[in-house]
Length: 350
Image (cartoon, rainbow, N blue to C red; front, side, top):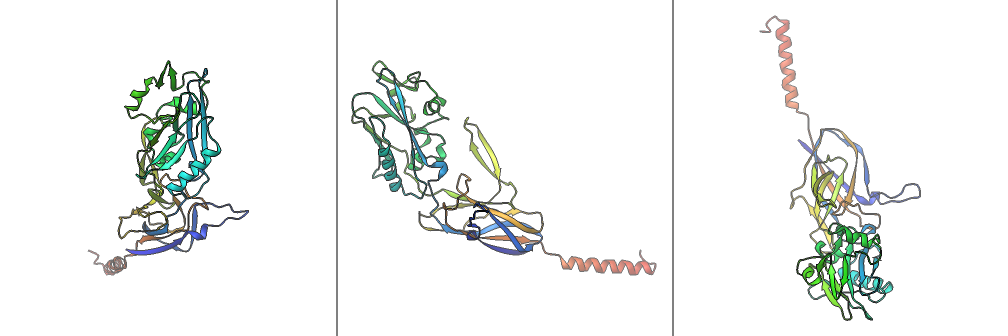
């Protein structure tokens, strides 16, 4: 067996013209094809660890304020838009305060702060008379700003928790009719449960906003970097399998053409160097075919590829194992055939 190594620089694909729009997929065509390739693996990868952590698909912070003591209770909804980019948790907190101040609720503006424990807290204090409750919502929790701030899934209202919260966020429920948070007499009832009991059962967070209100924090510290990156490759069959949870709670598995999983175990703004010398690489079998062209694509930990302005250039080295011809076997076969022909001509083939 022999080996061939291929150095790839993503800068070669980072182009965009009026006729050729940018694509995160790097398409490679080799001047000298790789013949008889039996396997491929990535042996090194390098890039700055400063990929955008707020992108188009996760750039909103969603929340609701229930006004309960009105003759006809109402819900105010906000979806705060965060400009895409790379944020530290401190910068994200500051940005959320800016967008919340620019679009406040009628009697309340949530205030975001970073505690000494490095957890993010929200303070909700309302003005004027009235009983109000504030909650967080996430259309897609794993891609939400709230998740990046350190709030866990069981602290938010989501469709998976109760479809009623999604209906109320999307305004499909008539005002004051069967809201998930209601005022019955002088008691606040949340999803048919007394508020005191609700808070004792690890249910989603509900802020009391009456007057001074209260401050509640996320369950963990926020995170700025992706847990890992994924390098996809068109040469690889779908031999990488991962599990995921559907919106109905059912756990499923899916296959993907993942060449390598790259752990981002360095601090933000550091340089990420991944090497097969310290981590066992994924080795993918090939059929011994000739490789003329293939494609690579770098994605985040949810398999979303990075756009043209969302990551810096990276480089990687791929290692191909080559099946070489067995010359000794060929020579032995040739001598055997010559011997058989000699015996056949002299009538002594036996």
